Amino acid sequence: MSKKVVTFGEIMLRLAPQGFLRFSQADNFEVVYGGGESNVAVSLANYGIPVDFVTRLPKNDIGECAMMEMRKRGVGVDKIVWGGERLGIYFLETGAVSRGSKVVYDRAYSSMSTIQSGMINWEEVFKDVQWFHWTGITPAISQSSADVCLEAVKAASKLGVTISTDLNYRAKLWKYCDAAKREEIMTELTSYCDVVLGNEEDAEMHFGIKPEGAAVQTHGHDVKAEAFLSVCQQMMKKFPRAKKVITTLRGSISASHNTWAGVLYDGKQMLQTRQYQITDIVDRVGGGDSFMGGLIYGLLTYPDDDQNALDFAVAASCLKHTIKGDANLVTVDEVNKLMGGDASGRVAR
Image (cartoon, rainbow, N blue to C red):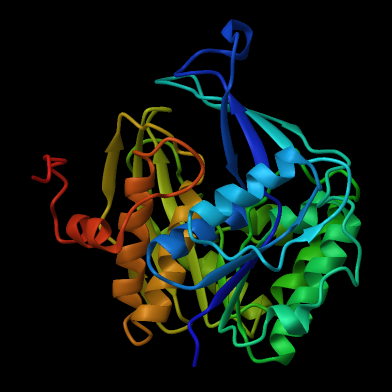
């Protein structure tokens, strides 16, 4: 069977002041194109997995630039639909030490936010496809975007495609409905998923699921994997189709220094990875997407070795923190080298 993957979501224009400047200090912005699902697609293309990115773009020069960025990275773009008014934008102010990063969205009336049911022929999209990935960002954009996402998961399920999600709760995006409606939308969409990635905030904000016993500590070094076991168990009970529930464990010592690890629960056992110390972070945006890209690659490449797949995902996303921009531009060999214990960063001659 084909190992082809499809991802679906919004790609945006990212505008950021250079280096660690604040918005108020900037007299120019660096341009990057990225978004949760497009970042996953770029990771997979780098690893040699055939992947299509499905979205809706405005038929103008900026929409063309976003499409060309995907094509340049080896991502299939022939399933993209064209129309709408504009490409969504987000502004990023990169934090340092004790000052956190900031994001300001400007994506109202974007082409993806005004997408409508019936615009995408999902049966055609999923022809010869093994895996479909969406994130909680897509249904957060608008009701119609959520409707199209539901069309996608229903079609993928009907065709026997493996479905994954990164729950990705974004408080600044969910504006068109109340919390009860949000839970209803995310519950229906997630019920079609075989693989679910999310942290404790995602589980609580979307589904009201909280860790039992001790609270999860996400500040400082001491992030305990065991605290997530109850979250994973509750998620599996709520979503019986899910075969694996995964979470990343980020300990935030400062904006420039994080610890990073991951756990995977398959209903019987909880696997966990080594903990990486990520100091002098270059760009943490897209860290979760790079984890998901590594995880999908790992689960496709090592279908009987979840530990190897999880280790690959964490190492891949550890490397992403050293790369400017949204997407993880690393190779399988580079990830395997870090998994093997080589974190020296020496020049390869």
